[in-house]
Image (cartoon, rainbow, N blue to C red):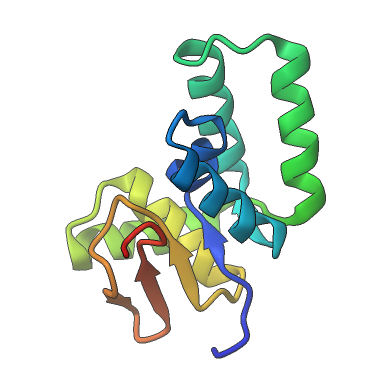
Length: 135
């Protein structure tokens, strides 16, 4: 899957709001190159932006618009859910992490950028987990 667009987990997207300048800059640079996110990522972003970052709705909507303009959006459906159940059982992932991985695989991604899973883990012989903040 060389050359396939990467998939961004919510934790990478949330670094756009971070006070950690190095991680915020890295997240911004990766997202500027484009990739894929899912509706789950958008929803989780909204929840954290509103609750923890106390962003107002106009600011949240502005960031969402930017994300949707630079990233393809992978919808979630029964097929995603069923593949996520397979990943959760096979690899021991939470259903939330498994949904991210299932959405990435169904979108044809070869990489998932996340801090939440084991760096360089290979999922289903097609999807590689990468922590983009490791030196």
